[in-house]
Length: 243
Image (cartoon, rainbow, N blue to C red; front, side, top):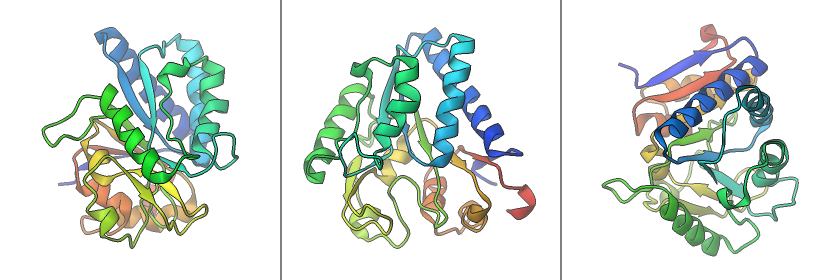
């Protein structure tokens, strides 16, 4: 029995619109319940389309973001104004258009020492989000992309025990196979603890990695996420026949 949900779309734009609509439904539900909504964002090309679709639909639907707290699944160790910064992407395409309050934006400080940034990120997340019985903060939603090697956040294939056995919410990545080499990432246990995890997977070059990730014995980082929890939701523009 599979422990994930695969949603297929005809194009990246259709994928982005569907994911944006589903996210706004989650935010609206939190608003009705009077609860905060804690989300971890990612970067990547499909994320740009997702942010644009979210802005368009949020304005049409008049969904309030006042209860949303923004965190990140990962960040490059660069200043927040650097083109490589995941914060910069969200700030320009999501926060500025929606006039998000600065106090709701809890960015990973890529300009700091990774060891310091990791500790500060953990303290900030644990200040806002509830914790489960394993003392992991519980995000309402983690939004992930997936690379052609199956990596998610900054969790890459062939990682060592310092990554695979990490028990704290965030970790420093010192030797990423993709530049820049130094990054900060949510850990596997922190992703597994989230109430919902969605992966937005777009592009024909990712078919092999997604196919392996969905296999019960898959070895990719995305496979590890899927196997660690139930109900991970995949939004993909890849034909199901390719998977």
